[in-house]
Image 1 (cartoon, rainbow over the protein chains, first blue to last red):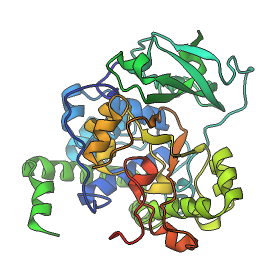
Image 2 (tube, rainbow over the protein chains, first blue to last red):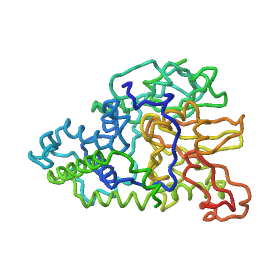
Image 3 (spheres, rainbow over the protein chains, first blue to last red):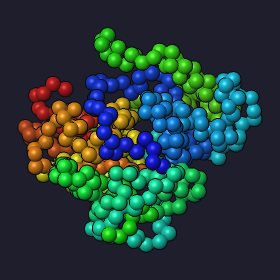
Image 4 (cartoon, each protein chain N blue to C red):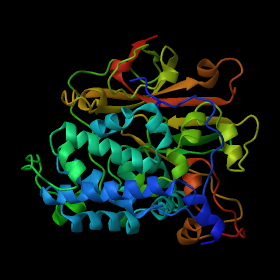
Length: 219
Length: 210
């Protein structure tokens, strides 16, 4: 979706403000939100792409004015309600009122903590040979799906070069919408800065994205 | 913690903050009552993030690459595989790509769409990495972003920005500082900063305050 989360190339957000000796969490509740997101994801309530989609679909003014973990919280709460794990009445009451919905991987307890400290695996067997080779020129498609996609707006329509082939991975555009993993080839595609930003762009800049094969046409 | 520091983080609307805190607690209560999560397991997740991951992991990898040419080559060919041989920092998972800074090219990592970041190597990302100014400008005006970090590059140096748009993760291998001949891996690891592995900074130089 063409949401405000797709920020590459936008102007007006001001300077980057590094914070010396930044704490891991600025408020205690932020750590609880992180833990709940990890736990409910690992228990099978949602995949990582669906959780991203729920953050992206926050209203733009909410997305832009909320802190990072506030967005995580709002996305988590809405996702769990829409998927039937809780109800708005329960959220309003602050207590469980209905029977739970079964979780695919069961309750998240202490025995599950170790396994989530290693990143999940996203590589999948290839359903078909790769269409592109390293060095091929490709054009990022001019597509504007209203649902989740990982093709940022700033590269759409532009020509780049395939630099790396990462194998076949879970396709976020499908997984986020719970339409299956639909594995696709994944490539690093590199673009010239001036092709993206015009003649005033930095001549020394190259930008790459990791692009799934359905995002690309031969060029 | 100085008063200035405190003030910097708490000049939000206090009622809004406490409302969020109440809502977060309510959600945890519901998830617990429904039997979805065990609060002790949430505590354990937080403790694991606070103690097991962090830039010290990435720093060990970088320092080893600086001292062991065979490891460096393996690391650049397949980051995940090379790091999997390192024991205590081996839990990096798949799809880690290590990109090398050279006198000709500087690398910088961003996630314009959300906040993708090599957690296992660097810990949880800092606020600035997840915030709009960095995500919007890194791909268009990286030298301007670097100036916000008081970092400047030679005018003709290529700058390569890696936008982490999939489940691939990127770690920058910075250049080894001059004046460190004969240093041990442990000594070198002490020079490697988090930002030098994101590409928004350089390693410390010998003698500089840490």
